[in-house]
Length: 103
Length: 103
DNA sequence: AATTTATTTAGCAATATTGCTAAATAATTT
DNA sequence: AAATTATTTAGCAATATTGCTAAATAAATT
Image 1 (cartoon, rainbow over the protein chains, first blue to last red):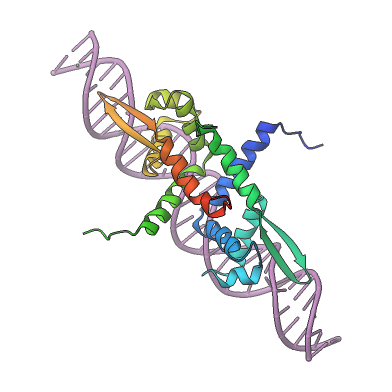
Image 2: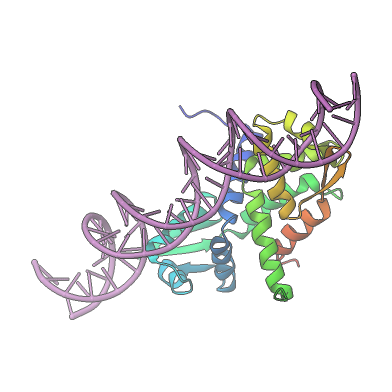
């Protein structure tokens, strides 16, 4: 049985995955590109807009997915990646809340 | 003469420094500890609350400072580090704004 | 002036991250 | 069934990050 995580433990793990994912400029840009294209794109369309190889992009996308910042759907042989905007805003704001008086 | 940066270039540089600084759990925790102690602490007081060596802490603090998330004042032989909460909130929110409809 | 206290700098080793190319897989079209 | 298209996996090299210890600096105390 996997150890059950408390609310706070889960949050800490989320913060870590999310902030690590956001630490790389290209990954931040992938999120912006997804947003600007309506939230959803195939792997190939994303690759076209960045200056690195497909395998490198695959890895960046996987990191974003593991952080829960994007989701994937396989449609025939294409992978459709979708921005999870609410989770991005939710987790980062949840951390920022610590510092925000007006909370 | 140093090249003059446009508004957007400066923002991108800020985002990069800030998100890189926030990528490490201990550095995020340093900010929280500073906050919980009223915003300002000496290097030695910070070191006491973390499980790593002073030189390692010095480096983390320098990264936070370069990101503009804390400032330093030398008072006699002590270094006083101060949380720059407004800048933390300002820069992260400025990036998040891209994703926030309600903006 | 010597010692103590507070802290940084230098430099190394271990680990993690990033980027690449080549090969593999899996679905689709010919 | 062979070829094409979309994409991932494997594995390597370069670079960056993190942590450490030892040495250096700088101010204060004895």
